[in-house]
Length: 379
Image (cartoon, rainbow, N blue to C red; front, top):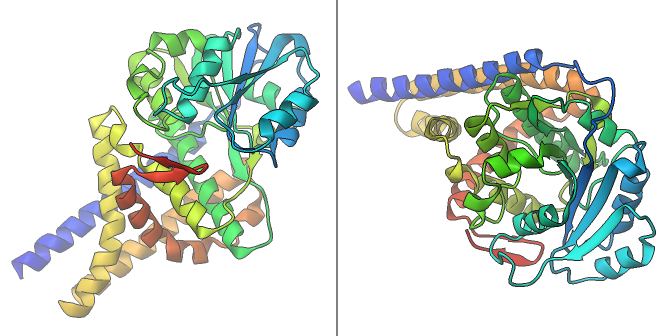
């Protein structure tokens, strides 16, 4: 009897903590500012695009970046080839005819274990811009993307996180991915608004090079294959007085492709989850562990309800209903601010698979080994 009470109290605590977390996100979304600069920054901009085996996408991103409604003399585009195994480098060299576009290849022995991060770091060394913008080679950008992202970069701001979405495709698997990914973007935006910047996406970020240097750049992360986005953002937040902003503007959205199959989806989420243990803030790490334990409790409670006591079925029902209700509230708010409301349609079916996928990716991410771009990555 005492054991049952203790377990139910633990499950209730995990639920309360998760509700508090979601309310932080919701309130943070309402605090996000749309006040921006009326003009583009005076500083020169360097856009860095690491790529590896992107022959299907390289022409599209090249065109989308050179066709920006932004003065060509105010920005450069730096493509960094990271040991491509296809013809993407040859294609890029063939089509490149703009003075503000430069192409480099990372030396094989240059920070070999850092992978994507080494490509960005190499690009930073070649860049001349005072503001660095990074994006991914499989992304497409609207013509006003750069100006709408950078209008959030004032003199007090050190880092801007921009919105990213998956391209719409008419299959249930990709619709679910699109919604789930939007949930991550909305969560990241809300946490920035709440003053607790935690997650962002390197497909659409901007930061000052002097601030990057001020926090030591990627020096303390070069043993990790990822983390070029949120780990840097967190370090700027914790170690400097510069502001972190979210670009709350639908015209600043970058579009990328959803995963084509479950295997790719699994490896992507495993790669993202593998960064969590390297967050420098122990309190933040504790919060993430508690959220993971809440999701784990949603598996444990119904099992206990069947084999031990029906009380656990009641606690599970309360936990799951509260989770769905508050997540729906947050998603509605976030989608209204950023995305197409049609995105919300597969919400309930997505909720059914969210719990097991988060548990699986979270546990597998602890080991840090995964496959990315035909590479076997070890943490």
